[in-house]
Amino acid sequence: MIVLVALVSCGNNKARLLTRTWKINDLKYSQEIPESMKPTIQAEIDRLRAGYSITYFADNTYKAVNEGASTTGKWQLNYNGTKIITTGPDGNTVEYQILELTDKRFSFSAVIGGQKVIFEFVPSP
View 1: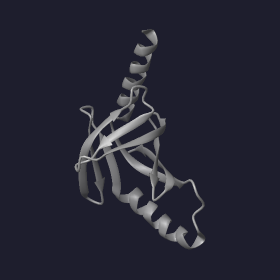
View 2: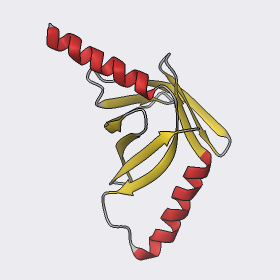
View 3: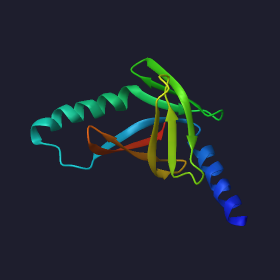
View 4: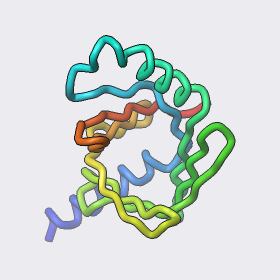
């Protein structure tokens, strides 16, 4: 019983850390990006840094803003706070592996186009 309480408490602490506005700091790819694609990828990362943020609210909703256009949905952490499960406005549910969650950094991995991508966020000022 004590272990279960500790796991739930850990998830609640992580939920409190997550509830704020985050902006993208960097994206990292698991496979080497071809030289010819590096300028395009870097331009996309720069665009996201300038125009993308996501706010996780305590009521388990989120709002993502990308260059002024917003999307809303719901989020939850699994029992031990190692995964975030999101449900978008279309009803699709996606699960992401949390790699780091502190008051200064939030990172998770996702598979995009068959490649693992690590999203690194920092709190938005």
